[in-house]
Each structure stands twice: as C-alpha cells, then as structure tokens.
Image (cartoon, rainbow, N blue to C red; front, side, top):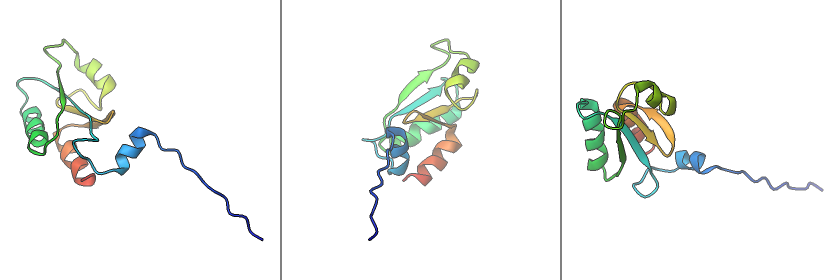
Length: 102
C-alpha cells in the first residue's frame, strides 16, 4: 500500500506578492526621485493614472547620495522604484513589471 505524503510549502509575503496580480490594495511602492527628473514624473503619473499610491523620497531634499540610494535600490540613477520591498529599477522597469504582474 502506498502512503501519500502531505507536502506543505512556506511562502514569504514577498514571494507571495510576486505570485499575485498587483492591485492598489496589495502593493506598497516607493519612488526615489528628484524634482527635475522627467522619468520620475512619468513613473508617478503612470502609477497615479492606474490607481496606485506611492511614497516618494526626493533624494536631493533629504540629502541622500546616489551611492546611499543605490545601496537600497537597484542603481544610482533616478527614478528608482521599490515594489513590496523589491527594488525593480527605473521607469522602463516599472512598465515591464506591471506588464508581467497585471
């Protein structure tokens, strides 16, 4: 007689968020930006137009160096976007990310 084994998987909240479709209710977004950055404005408009809120961190207002920003994001250029604690990159990466997770 064969015994069946129950297999349980543990998913962290970050991994689980990748498996779900992005919605304003399950998505936390942070944008590192500057006031003069065109792609930053496009990223913020894209998110707002799609009903997503976000926290904005202006690196110049907060005196954050690009090296400091890069240590918590994916790079030294702005914008740098973090979704559900995962650094995804800039504006083009944001569009690709939403295409994959929508």
